[in-house]
Image (cartoon, rainbow, N blue to C red):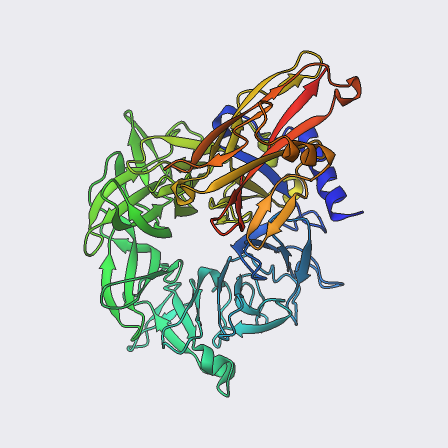
Length: 588
């Protein structure tokens, strides 16, 4: 079975289960479901996902970890897959050199960087369930060297503890010694901490650092630095989330400890100097926020960006166990998200909660979050998951700059197949159109796992069908963002579908299969039938064009689907960003 036929069969299966896109709440996106090539119960394909250009062809690729997959007789050891952009029609797999039973590779997440400084993307993957020296859930992590990911370095806890969960959540690749190679940070969130007086602080948490030049050199795995919790506390889980933070006086690292007691609240974020690893600050939960009674699990996820109407650099901090009071009703573990700005992030700019908070259904709002400009309007948006007690899990996009309006992903899907929808999120520009795709993990039926790929719709039409007997008009709107302003565009059509599409050049993809109709259309450019099918994008990167289909076409065309797509042409004649496809049914 070819990759195209496999993907087509999966889409037919998806449609039969009521998973297809098209609900009103998701009209901004085309949605595709990506399933693992080797599906299995409990395999959890996509449990951790990174989107990055692995092969340097100008298109981001989807790196999906399948944490429950087997490697030969080694059950539940896990493996990874690379699906190559722009159409995700081809893939390769990779596994640890020494896979371990019940390791669940990728169960703790993944991140990308360049550890060996060769210019290719490397991958850091967490395996918090790994059994080390007989200690259950001690955890470990792997560095996979790109671009093939066929060589890995297994990172072990030098002091393994049962339940320490090394590699769970806290993963970071960052060059802290300015040698051109990213260094490796791995959280060990439930590791005990021994104080100078011999007191044991249980589950306080720590972070391990391997400098790349030592890890790859003579020092090897033995050369590491231990970063203990600067404010040790029982159950604090220091190292839960790690984030690089640019600062005027040098790079900083944020390391959260979301279960740290802070007065009546819970959670803290430590600020570390990246060069010295010394603690330089401490971010506490906001003391007062709308609808918030007590803050819980402050720092379960952190993202940064230019936030709010003033484009001020800030943090989006998730607090999934926050207690809310909405309309006089109290709700435990409802969760909240805080936008913090100011010099030390001590100013609360916005508080966000689930639009369905306190309906006895939504809980733990915000276990995952991202900051990105989804619609390319120049304002950063907030993407936050919104779990449910009834397997009706959703993802919300709160639109910048004030986050008052939102769009919902996952609405209208069959609940049983969206259990865990949004429990992992990733984004990247798979088709190189200038808009990042959003990948949303779901456990799917039997925890097979799957990724819903949300592709921003850049081409729309005012009709869904045209009569070949009577003819008709179709008006199209192309919106490719201000980054494409003034460039020439060319629209084309065909009746052979959009998959796998056409790669017009490096970083240029048109979701259209070229056929005789395509070439006939190109010959008719400038005619009244194809009004403005070529022209220039305006200052906002927009254009409109129309198809005027005359009647009297041959009856055999009825039942065909007309696909229309557009591509930008750079001033030098090089093809650039392509649009999303529009499909119009040809009826009698």
